[in-house]
Length: 187
Image 1 (cartoon, rainbow, N blue to C red):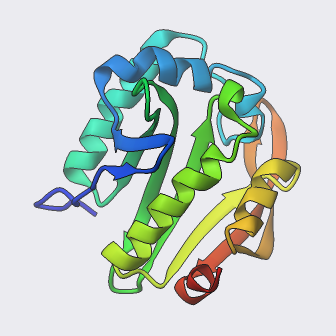
Image 2: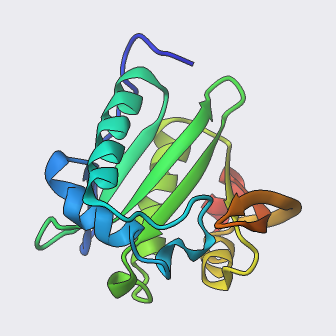
């Protein structure tokens, strides 16, 4: 759905993170994430092979932010402002009070609670700022770290979509998760 005005995306902060707009100079860091086959193992598309793919993605993000109801944050280290991950909120439906969320984090920054920290900031904005009542996420059920992250945040696994994606010739399932505002607030 094309929009006349850009959906407001605030900058969000914690002690360790700055969530901000994605910038053209983020291309090398974004490429480092999306070219890592370990990070991309459970994504719906294969690892990137050229920096130009990151540059094209940033141009696409700018277009999406301008033309669509989508939020895309660079997850940056608070001290250096270096992009270490990203998170997108899409399929935003204000009338239904729902949206979908996705995220990625550079392998060197995983295991420190940073994805959880970033998602808590974003979810608080979605529930309090945008007045959503439900946020959905999907993960490859073999990606146990991502599934555990979602569950720690209060997401409930609501179903399994069999053979949803084909990545590198492999058919992959999707575990589908939902989080209600009241469940998030109860945590």
